[in-house]
Length: 76
Image 1: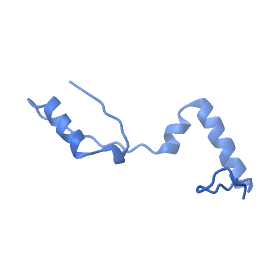
Image 2 (image 1 turned 90 degrees about the vertical axis):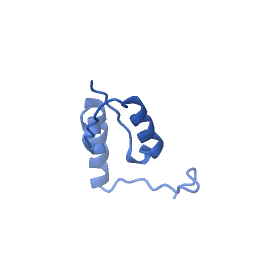
Image 3 (image 1 turned 180 degrees about the horizontal axis):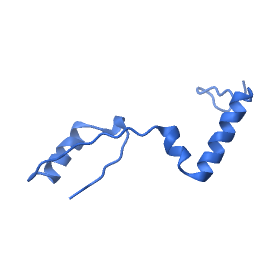
């Protein structure tokens, strides 16, 4: 049986491991770690690819937006 779990590393917890052990209590589990690069993931979808490449080109031309995270509505 193959079961796939996908989550961020921040979501990996002792509680998850306990649940995994409970769900697969009568067997051996092989853990495969496959790190997904977020940019690579976004480039897989044609629409996301278009938007991302457009944003990269804008940034390379110096067309950047600065945001004040303490007050996002404030223009810098």
